[in-house]
Length: 254
Ligand code: IPE
Ligand code: IPE
Ligand code: MG
Image (cartoon, rainbow, N blue to C red; front, side, top):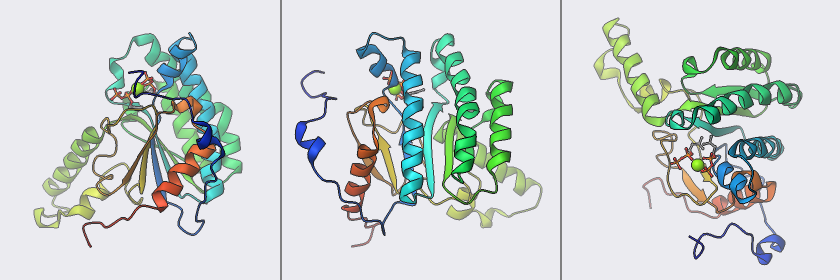
């Protein structure tokens, strides 16, 4: 691991100037917030402290994204597979969701952020569901960035639930089989009405999607970094956007 995994920044990386084209800001940025556990381990802290530190990064990155004019920011906070973790870690994560909303919602509201959740929240503890509901209600008419928190989210689970809804509409004679097309499927996902992510960012050194936005990321640009999420800064976001702006998105064309 030590040979190629290096989460320390090089000196040159710290000083290098990052140029962002303000006229070509990605409309939708998706992030797999990973590496909280490793961040904590490096410091001999319990994993939960890593998740807590990760919350501070959320605050910073939401603020910076808003400032840059990003329209949608989708943050992977808890996957359908994360229930496999020890019960105390799962409980701590659920508590952090409630704590985050409680602490941040007024500031988010002030900044015109629309708070939203993607995923099957019916499986979350009741207090979580209630705080999500009130945060969504409070911010639903805001005009700024839409913040999607992916909670009990799985790309495959999302597609399964979309397919079920479509099948039911056919049984109810509301639509016909011939009506099924890509747009109709998109409209039956949690991200209905939102543009697909332009860029998917994954810190922590893992090079995989982990069941994130499988349908929506068909033509997303991917950006990986060895920095753990609690250490991720505004500068890293700028670097990701700047790299994105230097890519050539062809969408299958020439
Ligand atoms: C990401 O950090 C947060 C969640 C998945 C909830 P991890 O907890 O996965 O951190 P690592 O991967 O163990 O370092
Ligand atoms: C993906 O991270 C899920 C979230 C960041 C919420 P994981 O840490 O759960 O992913 P794997 O297990 O390394 O693929
Ligand atoms: Mg992880």
